[in-house]
Length: 149
Length: 334
Image (cartoon, rainbow over all chains, first blue to last red; front, side):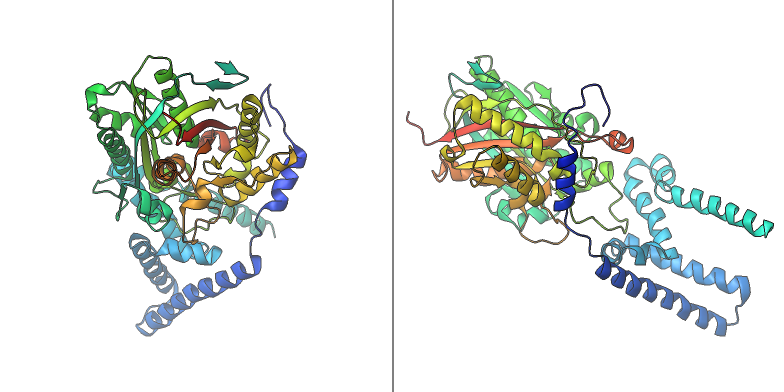
């Protein structure tokens, strides 16, 4: 609570409210996240085998699989399906690379109405920006630790 | 006349006509059967959701004016607001009309604030016909307050669903089956709730404060009313509101909540509807028509609003809330 006239910051009330809050179904959420996340990874693995048979290997193979998954993440976002999967799966569809694709594509679509430059392009990383910043930052930290060891 | 924070209207302004437009999700519920227009498509034939919201509001106002048998020239003022920044929907909708416009912002309690001010203008003799209107749109509110629509994230179980819809009513010095007897002005209450997904808990103290002050100022008891209607507390907020009334010794059994009523299918709505359009749609469709039909005689309508912004919640501020109450009466003599 801030402000000179802050009134009634009622600890008892806040306790009462949190006691009433509907419980999050952790077990069910974990289960559906595991199932959907696992399914997305299995699809990725399927493409990995297929492209492996087609003759790709190493970095090329990893890159190609990522590109395919990103493509499907964007496509399903555009079709309005990915948010429905996300509501059910939670972290299961946010953590894989398709979730990252979704977090870039969804604001891009949403802000299309403000034009391609100030809308789509400028707002594209409103959600993903945080992921990139802290992803790179933690990468650097881990790199330093790795270097010291 | 005034007692406490309650204004008693000497001439008792009438609700001459009313109109409501609701979206496709609301169409499935009770609002769909009573609203004048129930949309099959939330875009309403427009290219953006903001334009659709503006069109809903504009059409609700013109429908209400039309149903009241009025022309643009006979309306003295439009009191309207919405949830978007700089209240663009209301202001842009006002372009369509020849009468003056007063912009309001009171978040989801705009409907009762509009009715209150319109009644004061009419009762004071400064106006003959005033339109009070407001609306909201799920998609435009999501974009402003939360995440992009297509982002695959989960909604917490205490969250509510912003209603797509708009409602308008004409408050008039002349005819009307429902009249506005008095109104209690809201005080901003903030009991320290910071969870933006739990609007019901944030708003319930404001609603209880206003309703209890209303009872005191009018020397009434909850039993004297057929209904005590709150705006968009949702299921959880209603539960808290009932507890708060009970605690002060008032019987909450006549209480209903527009947010709790509006949706039939429980999919992602969780605690029910919210948004300025929630109480606007329910009052201007179901409740007014039932009052006109004589089912409810004395009704207290207290819409509730959470006065937060994405900036304030981002900076960790708690949520100040407000509720204005309007007492309505139907089936009166003369």
